Length: 472
Ligand code: MSP
Image (cartoon, rainbow, N blue to C red; front, side, top):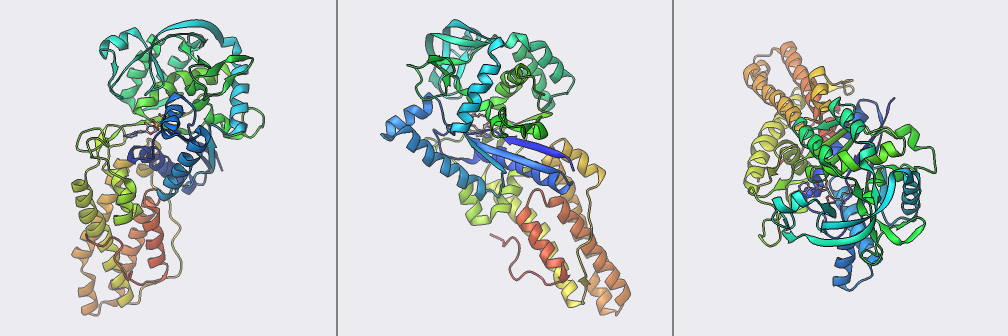
């Protein structure tokens, strides 16, 4: 049994959970379920990013204490994750005392690579990021993502000497020792890395109260990204317990494309500074859009995943999200596309297949003494190991459609009518066996449905009373 550690980005607590956050969780959950089915022992981390000026500002606006505010927000994310059917093994909040202490220890272990300097330049509070002059010019002085002018800063900061590790990181990315997916992001990251100056990793306390103090310097607070990135290690007990040794390096880290730069540059530099291995794979997904546009409350095009789940069920959401929302590129969630996929693919293809096969088995006394032992084939494994989840779905769906066609071609009802009992039994048991294989391949993606299908076909076969996916 291999131990595998899978991580998700920890969202900022200044906003509420939304459909974009679901992407990290759903992708990581498929990965974990697949590893588990392959016999691995897996840990899945999730958590909340609770420091920083945006969170401070939001709580102040609402007139509540920051701690009260983040407690309430964190609760919303815990609920959100469980409603997506995602079972994490470890949860970290960056305001946990244990996390804070561990991050301070991490800082101390990095001091050989840290120096003090004065930063004079631009900052985006939306991105919590220092902006280079080149970027400032390219974006005409305002952040294209947050539509807010960059702020001018002149302050004394601690810097992290990224230059100590640039070559090593570049080699790891080029050689796929730290595999960056998708492939087309690799070049982009290598360019950013080559241009990357040393990064400022603290802010003066008077600018940012709400953060972890820099050990040994009361006047400075850590930059949120040092705090946030460390969560992947602190949640494993690093550095004061030895548990992390069994789990690190991570098998897969899931992040959005907007934060890949932090994970592919600052994070590896921190790890190398700590003498730790780099993660095996960094998977960066695209953004979820609505009708080609960023979702925003002002435009009124925000899709709430809970609305989808309440109306159509969890698996319908996961199915659409994992198959029809492109994993690696920006991609739309539209109700029209969703409803088409639901009715044509889930209700017609899969739902009907299960219904009619189970009904024919029940009618003709077909029973399974127990569910067969199943395994994944090579083609499936290759795609899953490359995190090409939508392609896996395409392949599995061909098999679903082929099974429907086989029923139409082999016409079991004619065999029954003609009294060809042996042929009929062979035909139906063959179809059930192949359906169960398909069902096995769907397990990482739509776990509620696949459990139901197992139940229907284990032992005495009975068609479900209600269709798996009632037409809407
Ligand atoms: N707090 C940082 C992450 C720190 S990880 C050490 C952050 N938070 S976030 O709330 O802005 O984003 C959390 C995750 O959600 C990121 O992976 C981000 O890419 C993802 N998404 C946020 N909006 C998204 C969409 N509209 N679409 C897809 N994913 C998006 O960044």
